[in-house]
Amino acid sequence: MMSWRIRQAAIGIVCAAAILGAVPGAWAQQEFFTREDVIKYTPDWQGERFPDGRPKVPDAILDRMKTVTLEEAWAVLQNASFMHQYEDGWLSIHPDKVLVGRALTAVWMPGRPDIQKVIEEQGVKDHRLGAMNAWPVDMLQPRDVYVADHFGLKVDGPSIGDNVGNAIYAKSGNGIVYDGAVRDINGLDELPNFVSFVRYYDPSHHYGSLRSGKLLNSTMVSINGPTRIGHALAMPGDVVLGRNGGVLFIPPQLAEKVVKVSEATHLRDTFGHLRLEEKKYTAGQIDARWTPAIEDDYRAWLKENEDHLSVSKERVEEILKDHE
Image 1 (cartoon, one colour):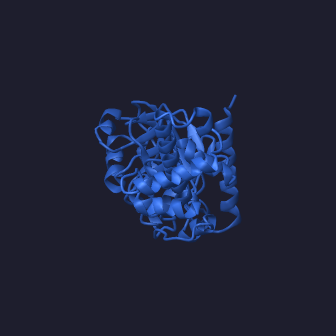
Image 2: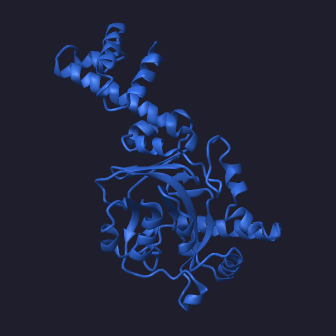
């Protein structure tokens, strides 16, 4: 019996074929998303964008995102009604490090020669070089994260080994979120900041080109479009936060809010833990809604220590102003 994942992929192929038949030349428009398509599907982002249309969350926000916990970010997304942004169950490369970056997405489906031929011919017209697995890699920008749905393909599935991995790392300085298998894991592990979340390691090869003369394993049908990663939906330009075995895809318009909420939470936790160690307050007092007296004590502590806290002085002053 065909698995649920494969059935869903097959449905996607039918939908793609319907698009092709309905609109002349629509494949490049609807599957390999244009700048206009990306902007259309990320309407809530009002800031800077990359040439391909992806939201460009500022580097300063990415830097601050590295201290955010999954719980803190998850709570902000839930409160904003983004319910399907988290996925876990990964094999991690450099599991002790944190992955933060802007998503560039891609979708693979089970290989089908007639669809593959159409896409490869379009790739020639679009001046794309090499096999499909190199196409999104060539588009990566510094601090991007390559996010790909390879429908969990393991045996004969790895489209990323140490060569492609080195190319990804050279372009982005970052790692990947890859719902599939990688190979040459020893070589990937040698890249110091290739912090990655993948499904499997497998020593086999991926065959993704009609020119390979081998069985076609999979076909890339989307770049920079909506991408399902397990139970989550990732969009191009989402901020990827990967740590402690889980990955969150944060809509760009919420990235700054996530950071600010996290920083405020860290400060309150630091103050609460300090006062508990000093035995000034009980656990019941700190773990409940703070009284006005504790809030006053907290504000005084912020003012006294604003030059040497875990967040910038500007952020501390902003929090104090919000309290007022």
